[in-house]
Structures are given as C-alpha cells and as structure tokens.
Amino acid sequence: MRRRASLVLLSFAVLFAAMAPTLRWYAFPRLAKVPPNQYQEVVLEARPATLLDYGTLKSREVEKITIVQTLKGNVEESKRIEAGTDRDVVVWDSLSYFMGPDGEMVSKIPERYIFDAHTQDPVNAPGESVDGDPVKREGIEFKWPFLTEKRDYLYFDAQTRTAAPIHYAGTRTFRGLEVYYYEQTIPWTQVPMPKTMPVDGITPELIASTGLTRWYTTKRMFWVEPVTGAPVNGEEIHKEELRGAKALMGTDTLTVFDGHVKMREDYIADTVELVSANRTTVLLLVSRLPWTFTLLALLLFALALWLEHRSRRPACGAARKPARKPARKPDPRTAPAPVTPPV
Image: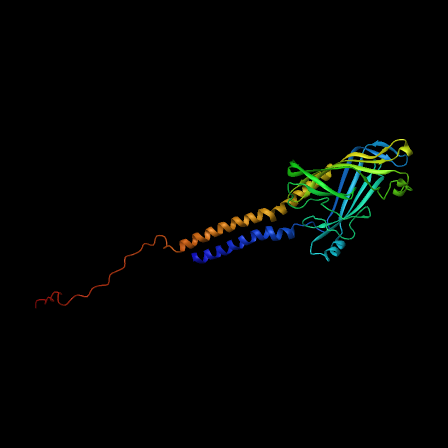
C-alpha cells in the first residue's frame, strides 16, 4: 500500500516539476499580451501654459491646456497584418487632441502604431503613420515590455518622427507601487506643422510660405511599473516655437506652446488600479505559480522517497519471532523401555 502511494506522489511531483518551467517559458509569452481590442483614454493638463493665438499671431498665457489622448485597438487591421507574419500583432489608432481653455481645438495629431503584442517591438507594416505621414518606427512607444529591465530603451518621438534613447534613472515608489523612472530629452528640432490648424484658412502650406518654421523640444518623464511595462504616470515639459518671424512680426521667434503637461489626478488613480490588477495576473504566470509548483514537486518527491523507504522496513511493532525447531524423533536404541503397569 505504501509503495503504491509513493508512486502516486512521485507522479504528481513529476507533473508539478514539468508545469513550473512550462508556465514561465511557454505559457507566459503566449498569455501575457496586449489585447488587440484595447481602448484607453488619458487626459493630461498644463496649468498654466503659454499658447499662440493664430488669429493675431501673438502668444498669451492661459489658465490651462487640455490634451485628450485615446488609444483604440483596430482588430481588423491586426488580423490583416498577422496573416503575413508569425507574430501576434496589435494595431493602435491613437489621437492626441489639444484644447484651449475655452474647449476649442488647438490641434490634433492622429497616429497608427503597430507592434508585437508580447514584446512591444514595432512591426513595420503599411499604414504605420503619424499625422498622415508614413513612418517606420524604431523603439517602443506608449508602453514598455513586460518585465521591464533597468536599462535605457529606444523611445519613438512622434513630433520628430525619430527614435532616441530614454534613460533609466532609478527605482522609485509611486502610489504604493515600485516603479522604474525614465527620462528623455529631445533637443530643439525642426518639426512639421500639424496638418489640422485651429483657424480656418490657415494651413501648414500657408505658414511655410511666410518663411516660418516650427521647432520643438521636450523633456518627457515616465513612471513605469516593471512587471506589466505599463506607465502609471507621465509628464512632459513641452515647448514649441515658430522661427523666422522677424520680417513678419518684428521678432525672430513666437512661442506656440509652453507648459508642464501632467496626467489628471483621476486618471492616475484609475491607471494605478488597473495596472495593479494586471500586475497580479502577470506575476502568477511568471513567478508565483512556477515557484509554488517547484516547491510542491520537491515536497512530494521527498514524501514519495520517505514512503518508499518505509515500505522496505518491517511494520512498526511487529517483532520477529524465532523460528521453531522441528521436534526430534526418539532414538529406539536410547529410548527407555516401556513400563508395564502391575496387574
């Protein structure tokens, strides 16, 4: 009975020992993925900010600028692109919508971002674009890889249409979560005018015809939860200028936008809650279940060995009895004569 129990325990030990690496190295890359139908909205604000009035071509300080950033998964495009690859592909149609203090549009920039659902590496495919211009991305954008490392990454800048390093700058605690802090500074660079302008009749071509050029610099900061690779907070110190305006306005530069852009508090709270839940799920696949199964396998293996050892020993309390010697037959030569009873 003990030997049968030890074989059962040994079978379960082998099962758990096999499941531990399977979860970590096989299931994790296939299950930890960005869903293709994800929808996300984030609201950012700059309070106060400097903004160019295109009607008067004068800069003025305003109470706030609001940026609504939406990410919408395009399932149909994901399936189309996946058909030509052996990867799980996600297509995000993104829109950054800038509004002034009166709620009127200042500008809007659409993007199409195509990337690997697990690694977040860009997948260069037709349709990849920023503000209608085809691009070929390098580096990550919006999200870091699962199990983010303490190192620099290439991060794609939508304004310059190029990738530049974003630097790991230490581990911090943010709203109870351990996060990695990253910084990237884009130096002053000439960038294209947005195709959608806030004033009817003013187009990028019209502005270019006056000799004006648009320049941009930013310092962007991200607090990234490393297990999921999701930023739980993001900020930018963002500046834009029109240069070459001396002949038109008597000054060489016009400030288009200047402000410290931050996530709105309610969106930070929602993001931290969502990321915390996703973090638990990823940890189950990558560490908690594999380690639990490994310890269970060792425990069951040890118990199976103990039972096998016990089965080879006599039962407890059962003392060995000495073997009985067979009875000896009497020798007729030495046996005493029978005694005859008296009559």
